[in-house]
Each structure stands twice: as C-alpha cells, then as structure tokens.
Length: 399
Image 1 (cartoon, rainbow, N blue to C red):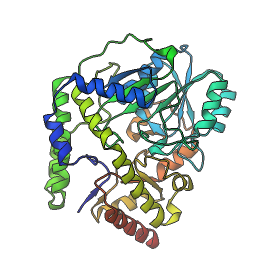
Image 2 (image 1 turned 180 degrees about the horizontal axis):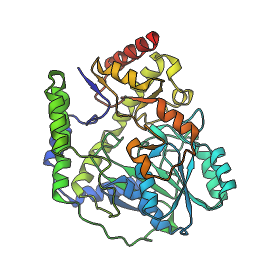
Image 3 (image 1 turned 180 degrees about the vertical axis):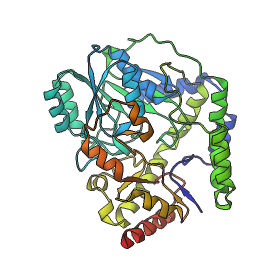
C-alpha cells in the first residue's frame, strides 16, 4: 500500500462523511469558544478562515509603533511573513540554533542588543518540538515585549518546564489547516490571553464564499479517492485532474488583506478533531519513537531525538544530503515524502523571492536543504513506519 506524507493524511471514512453532511450551527461555535478559552485561560477568542489572519489580528490589536520589528523564527512559513507585512511592520529574522529547529533565548537576546525596535516575538515550536520558552519568556518580560505563541504545529506540545504550549504568551494563535494537528481543512483562531487587549478590536470580517466552502467540503473525499486508487495509477490521474480543475483546497490560498470569518460548520469539525486529539497525539508519539529507535542515527538530530515525548511530532524530521535522490528512491517503493516542510528559510521556496529575507540565517538555510519529514499521522501504521525505516537505512548504506 502507498504511503503519503500529506494529501488528506488525517482523514478516515467517518471524517469524509462528516464533512459532506455537517451543517452550520451556533452550538458548535459556542462549544468550541468555551473549550478553547478554558483550555488556554483566554480572555477572548476570534475565529478566521486562515491561521495567518490570527497572527495579523494579534499584531493589529497590539497597536505597535509603525517602525516596530517582530522577531520570528528564521525557519518558518511565508504565511507568518505575510501576516506581519500586512500590518506594515518590520521583521527581525532569528536564526535557529545549530542543534535545534527553533531560535534560542540567547539568539533572541543578541538580536535585542543590536535592534532596540523589536517589540514582539513569535515562537512556533517547529513541527511540534518545543522552544526555549523559559528563557524567551524571561527576556520578553524584562524587555516589555509582546509574546505570541503560534501553535500551527504544536497544539498539545509540552515545554521542558512542564507547561503546555499556548498557555504562556499574551496571544495564542492556531491553524486548523490541512495536515495540522487539528485538521478541519481550513481555519484559524486567535486567543487573547492578556487582559489589557480584551475587546480592543473592531474588525470587519468578510463572508467566505459558498464556492470555497463547497471545495473544502469535497477535499477529504477527493483525497481519500486519490490515495485509494494510487496503486492502480488512476489515483495519480485523479490527482492531476482535480488540481487542474481547482477542486483541491490549497492551504496557501486567500493570502490577501481581507479578514475572512470561519463558518460554524468548520467549528464542528474542529471540535471533532479535538475529541480525538489525545489518541492522535499518542499515535504520532509512538510512530516518532519507532523512527528514533530504528533509523540510522546519522540522519537524526539530537534535539529531535531528545524531545519526542514532549513534541506533538507533527512530522518526524531527518537530515540528509542528496535529499532529492532519497525522495525519488522512496517513491519507487510507494513512499511519497516530497512535500518538504520547510524547503527554504521562508517557505515554500517559491514564495521566498517575494520576501525581504537576505540570507540572515545560515543555520536555517543549511537545514532547509537537508530536512526531510517522515509521516506520523493516523494512517501510518507501525508496520509501515518500519518499512520506511528499512528503505532509508538501505539507501544510506549504498551511498
């Protein structure tokens, strides 16, 4: 059976049916609102069609001086960059540590010594692996910096000091997009945790058009069919056809300046995902532990190895030279891992030329050329994980 890294990786037949039949209901919104406010000790919550809009709105609520800089991971997504630029703010790129996927408190402190205009910090816990929160939080408090925890990868991550990601910052942002920990095809949330920012907003939300909602409803069923029929090559044809007809939802769409609200039927899907999140995280952790135990250690980062039990393990990253050769080798055995996360410091690579990034982050550039993420989702069994490991270890031996 073929193994995919994404392409509706979190869905089963029950979710496919739920997506096609679920209707809007204010009860979903009320239930989700109450759940998230309690879980993250929030003061107020706002929902969006895209997670990027949550980051953008947090920065607008903060009402920072126009010449402010926002410190972000130098190994991140274009959506984070776009959110900051939509607020007409500047970016301070913080390179990741040599043995980490996130920037450290030391790197943040060094940046502050050089740039006094840094007013806010966004941490993302890349792929679910925890940031140096204790040191970063201390620096933010000492310098009166706004701290935003971006949980796009890390709903359920535990920091080394035992606290859960999302329970510390002034703002917590979430993405519920495809292949995330909580996957409702699309969606985002902003949880305002600092009381001083409560009700400090007056935004116009545009309605999500019915056509896009219809396409989103189709996404789980279409990707389910593609994967089911891939072994007989019909799946590949369907994938090409659906993409050509723009029937497959794209996570990087709607990158404009409009805030778009999230219809309540998506809230229902998010609730369903949260109800099974404990089981999902346990599975991801188990698969990540199998990779850690059996893969050749020369492709495993020690930081990743040491933090599997704390991480959500959104995916399990390995680090190789000649990445494309390994991707093509695995493809010959029905293992599809070509959708790299991230393939450049500001990813996807095709968007980097649209940024003002100027090679500030040496470690991020090195990692982005080497990283290859292995699947940990519910549709990857321990047996399949061992099959992936066997193939990678054989490939390493013949290099």
